[in-house]
Amino acid sequence: MKLYIDSANVEKISRLNDYFPVAGVTTNPTILVNEKRPYLEVLKDIRTTIGNEKELFIQAIGDTAEEIVEESRFIIKQIPGKVIVKIPATEEGIKAIKILSAENIPTLVTTVYTAFQALIAAMAGAKYVAPYVNRIDNLAGNGVNVVTEISKLFKEYQLDCEILAASFKNLQQVYEVCLAGTDTVTVAPDIIEKMIAFPATETDVGVFKEQWRSVYGEDCTSLIDS
Image 1 (tube, rainbow, N blue to C red):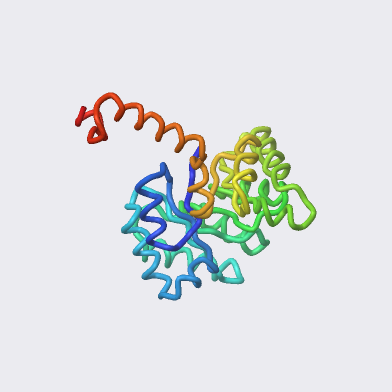
Image 2: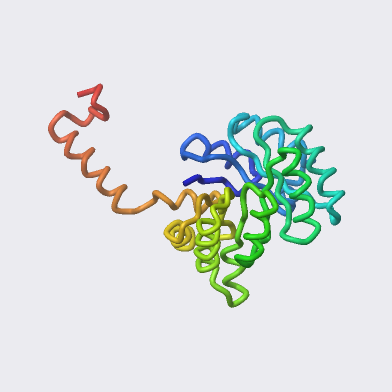
């Protein structure tokens, strides 16, 4: 299981990278535009923050396979470290994935709404597929079921492609796709922080501390002081 930060906010990425076991960062055109800075500058700052060994996902915006391939080669040259190019699940995108796979440029197929889209992408050579869980739900589908179906297909045909579930509105959706068999998830910073937040945990910690101080003194705040 791998956890990715779905953000381009360097400050938030830095904090989460320090505290959580994250495998990297996913971005998309909307996320990058929201930072209101030159996109290459933002991406290079993210790379500096997470280091070269963690994966950074960057989306191509070209319409044709040729444009997507050209952009992918450009991004790989501009950004050091492990870069994964995100490509939409379109005919032109699948064609581009076949070309990039032959060049050993890793790709993720994004905007996945059906298990068949994921299957074709994996067969074309994609390293990851990203089903849009909440967006599928909003279209009267079932995002968790789509993840389950993709997982079954990949296992049935022994495809070397990972499911990177995306598009979540709450923690429950993340939890359910983990149970459904996703390999990885990419989650917004505010939802990541909720993964370990639970009121009873903070209460218990406070009780332990008070009990400790009642015996060893109010100034004893750690094992070293006692």
